[in-house]
Length: 468
Ligand SMILES: CNc1ccc(C(=O)O)c(C(=O)O)c1
Image (cartoon, rainbow, N blue to C red):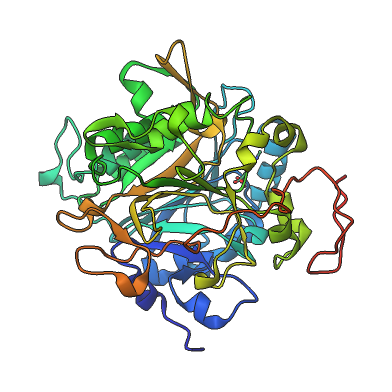
C-alpha cells in the first residue's frame, strides 16, 4: 500500500528486535514501509530532542550528513569518529570547516592495513540516550539503492544520581551490553570519547537485550583475547548460546560485501578457526571439527557477478564490493560455499548488499538459533586471527555489531522463526534480510571481483565495467 508509515509505527512494528533495513529508492513502496528507515528518520525529532551526537564511520560526507539532521539539530555538538590519515584527514577536516559544532576524533590505527570500519551513532537526547549500530557509510550512495542493516536501541533513560555507584557499572543488562560498549569506547584512548563514556555510564541500559560483538586493533591476550572479534562470539555462544544437542546439524550462514585473504585452504582459517567460533554452543566447544565441515555446514552469501550486473546501480554497485582478483585466485575453495544474494521477501534482490549478517540456520533454513548484524566482512582483519599457538588474537580493524539470542527475547526461547506465518509466541519471527532457503551459485556463476573488466554483458544501465 502507498500509506507512508510514520516512524513511530515503524518502531512499534520493529520491536523487540529493532533490526531494520535502509529505505531503497526505486522499489515498491510496501517494501520501504515495512521495517525500513532512512537516515533522516533516525535523526528526526520524532526520535527525541537532540542534545549532542557522535557518528562513528569509515566514510563521512560531512555536508551531506549535516543535511540529514533536521534543521533544529544542526547546531548541536557532533563528534565525528574516523580513521582517516594524511590527505584523507585533510579532506575530511575541509568538509567540516563550515560547521563550528563539529569536533573530530581520529581513531588510532596501530595495525597496518587496519580501517576504522565501525558504523555507530550515539544520540544523546534531553530525555535519554540511544545507540544505533549499522552498516552504511555516511555518504548519499550508501543510503540510496543498497541493502543496509540498522539496529536502533531502545531509548535508554537517564539514571538518577541515587542509582549511580562510584565503582563498577550500574544500569546494565544481563547481556552486559553497557559494560562492553564502555570497554569498546575505552580502547580508543581518546579524550573526546571520555565524554561519551560518561554519558553512557549515566544512562540505564537494562532494556538492552542484544550482545555487543566488536573488534579493536591490537594483539589481544589473556582475558582480552575473548573480548573481541570471533573469539567474543565463541565466548558468548559457548556460555549463553544454543544447546549443542539442539543445533547439532545446523549450518552457519555468513553474508558480507567484501572478502579478505583467507589462506591457502579452508582447514586453516575459514573452517579451522573462524567457523569454529561461529559453531560454538553450550555443552561442547564447537559442533564440528574442521575436517568434518561440508558445504552443508557453511553457507556463504556473496553477490555474484550477475547480482551486481542486474542490480539497481548496475556494475557501479561493485565499487562497494572490494573483492580483488589476487585474493579470489588464491582461494577457489571459498567459492564452493557461495550462494547468491536474493531478497525477494524484502523487495531488495536488486538492492546490492552492503549489509553484513551472520546466523545459525536449521537444516530446513526455517529457523535460526542466533543472528548477528555487523560491520565485519569475511576477513582476518575484521574478525581477528589467532597467533602464538592460539594465545593471542590479532585484529587490524575497528568493527561493531550486535548479536540476537532467542532466550534474551523470549523466556526459554531456543530459536527464531525465519518464516513469518510459521512463527509462534515461543518462536518469534525474526526479519532477516535475505531469502531462505539460500540459492547456491550455479556452475556458471562467479563471485563479483571488482578489479577485472566485464564487457560481455551490459549492466542494468547498459554499461560495461572497466576498472581504472
Ligand atoms: C577498505 N575499505 C573498505 C572495505 C570494505 C567495506 C565494506 O563495508 O564492505 C568498507 C566500508 O564500506 O566501510 C570499506
